[in-house]
Length: 432
Image 1 (cartoon, helix red, strand yellow):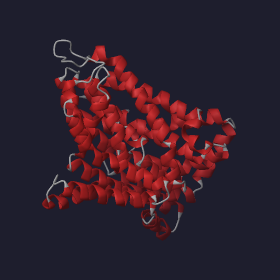
Image 2 (cartoon, one colour):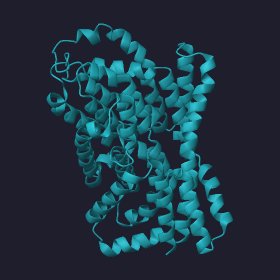
Image 3 (cartoon, rainbow, N blue to C red):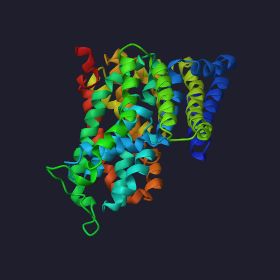
Image 4 (tube, helix red, strand yellow):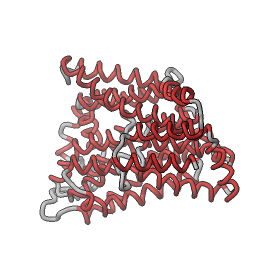
């Protein structure tokens, strides 16, 4: 009864526009009052959640990504991708996809990736004759790679929520990220003839065995300019996997490195630094508020033993891991359609994790399944944050985008099923 009231209140508040974090906190407090749980214990959960060292990586990665964006290092990365993809038809689309993957290795944020790539490549693609709706759909969908390629903010959230190793989660998502990138490139390649305006397309379908003069004439300069940006993933992932740094320490080093690069390179002035920090703080503050207040709701669910009840019900329905994972995917897909990513991860991870482990699912693999599934919600209405951000920047709308988004959505689901039922994709590193 109490759980039903909490869920109804939560849904009503989310529908009327109450901020996500406050909606979770208020419904959680209501549940505590009804169940006569001590409010002091519930309130302290927010504090103890935010004092988690792994979660400190979130604002630091956001800061590093904002510095990279303001220093225009992202544009240099886009140019570098174009140099190595000159031989592909529809090169700009492939550049958008690959650049999104690289950018994910710097920001860890899907929405930030969409905004940056849409601003850098969107107009160029439309100038080449690409349909506006397709450009918006491509950049929105490619933003998912911002989470699958480590570092990933939702994976940090998952690791903190269930006690899984963030380093192992990062290394586990590398192969799925590459698979998703290749799958998107195949979709783009097969879509070219249908999404190009034949009257305005200028060389978009051309592919040459020789170097593209337009891109390659400044190849040496572009490669040199992109070196600072390429070093960033090496700092982050190299530091983590070599054991020199934790994910949080790697995020701090990456932010400091990015700041030094753009200052020494005179890409920004000192007077712009406060604005960069302020923008990053606003973004990080919003995410951290959601994490803190969602913990109140989760605390009540834990005190009510809801995770244990779900585990018992699920095991009672089936003891088959294949069917359990199918049920989990359907549930998470629905949740991702209606909830903000980090809030959904924080809500569903503690609920489903015990059952998944009891069913013999590796905690790391389950983390990749959960985060990938919920992230797909970013291109699945009604929430679909990636779609709305891309539509605004590219001047498109949902009706123009949806037929194209649907193709990438089906592709994402196909890769998700591979991640779910082929454990080697995420656990490959345990083979060595």
